[in-house]
Amino acid sequence: MAFIGIDLGTTNSVVAGYSDGISTLIPNALGDFLTPSVVSVDEETGEIFVGAIARERLVSHPALTAAQFKRNMGTSKVFALGNRKFNAEELSSLVLRSLKSDAERHLKQEVTHAVISVPAYFNDVQRAATMTAAKLAGLQVDRLLNEPTAAAIVHGVELDTEQQFLVLDLGGGTFDVTVLEVFDGVLEVHASAGDNHLGGEDFTHLLVADLEKKYDLGDSFRSPLYSLAEQLKQQVGKKPDVSIKTTIDNRDLTIEYSREQFGALAEPLLNRLTIPIVKALKDAKLTPEALDNVLFVGGATRMPAFRRHISKLFKAFPNTDKNPDHVVALGAAMQAALIARDSALEDVVLTDVMPFSLGTGVISHENQNRSHFSPIIERNTTIPVSRMSTFSSVRPDQKSVTFDVYQGESRDLNNNLLLGELEIELPNSNEIEAVEVRYTYDANGLLEVEATVLSTGHKKLIVLQNNAARMTEEEVEKSLQKLQALKIHPADKEENKLLMARGERLFEFATGQERQYISDLMSRFDQALSTQDERIIEKARETISVLLDELEPADLQ
Image 1 (spheres, one colour):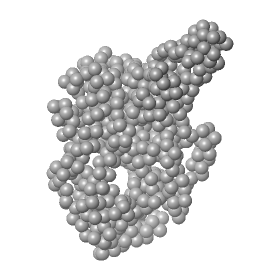
Image 2 (cartoon, helix red, strand yellow; image 1 turned 90 degrees about the vertical axis):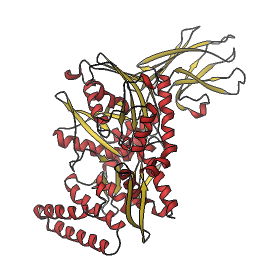
Image 3 (spheres, one colour; image 1 turned 30 degrees about the vertical axis):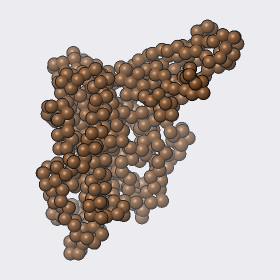
Image 4 (cartoon, one colour; image 1 turned 180 degrees about the horizontal axis):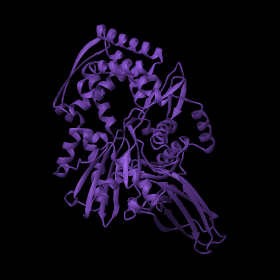
């Protein structure tokens, strides 16, 4: 059986395998390790594109393309791609199905199980949605692994000294902070915190809004502006001053931006990053000076503005040895091998923590018409864990008591996530009854809630495993049938379709003679495709690809 780890990202996704004591990345059909988490529909043929082709179509066919849907996992948001509609779980499943296919082609065997990484600060609804997406893709999830923990595994197994370190994971859509300690082959997570609505995409959208304002452009130009903002964000990471010439709304524009301008623009977002960092360190009872290392995970950590902000915060230069785009998938594959008790990792022990508190609602003594949250298992408690609290009935003649199960940190129940409820009958008596409630939570996200009436010993138990899933079994079955009927673009044709999609994107930006030049190149490639001769097609693809490279900004080739 293959040991597979998947980093299902907001912007890009990665799959890795583990064998012979080594975690290795698995390339997709284009030979790349990063597969863009983008899905597009060809309205004419009904074909579904996943990855690089779909990303190119974000500009040329925005109404038929979806991206960043990971941020909507577990919500009721619907993405309309032409006349087809998908939720975030279904779109994520298409990405997972593509990664599964890449792994099977590379490993030459069927892949049915995987460890999938999730942001450490994903709640149970979002984790359940990820499990649903995997099921729709034909994968059984052996473990949902927190992304910073996955990265820490890769770093930790290489250490032969004790260390306390911080993992900062800034991906496309989320930011996670995790404090860990390594000693005697043990990787122990002490605390996690994060922001599920802060990532690299937010910095891009910040640039889009600034460009709209500076150049008096409306919402109708969001797609080309988004692509332009991505170019700016990448280029200011490589040089202090950037100048890009482009055409939008038949206007020839020269966009000039400096690294300093971007840093000033991004300052509010950078300040938001500090909040979960402080929270995690406080929960771990550590000061920044007590840390031996700070690790970066996620492509957005490459931004110079981010690196300067963190260096200033910790008064040190963080560790950038590992590729921030790859390390999570590599760690997830190692976790898959750990679960399977691979002999190469037999001396490694990993512990993790709960990112959120679990508790129940209790009636206020001051106002019996109001309830508040009473934690039973506090956040950042090492899992597996079992905790107990004792509660009392409100009235002597009460027939039963209901314990709502909540996840969150707010005293106001409305701000927390309701996972389920347990109702237990009370004896017929004129006494106030005491009920003992025990929460037991394991590493797979299974929560067992047991209530015991102390006067009689009467017990009742429920098990909540991803109980907060938004989709019912019937809805999952309908989604499976819908997705199985889709016509997925064949991987062996991907290079040709990618070149056409790239040409369409560049055509969108160009005007005049340059636009006609691109059109002629695409016509030449169409003629080559019509011959159905692989040698002619390959030669034309190589030639035209080089010519299109000349039209791309140099830093993006």
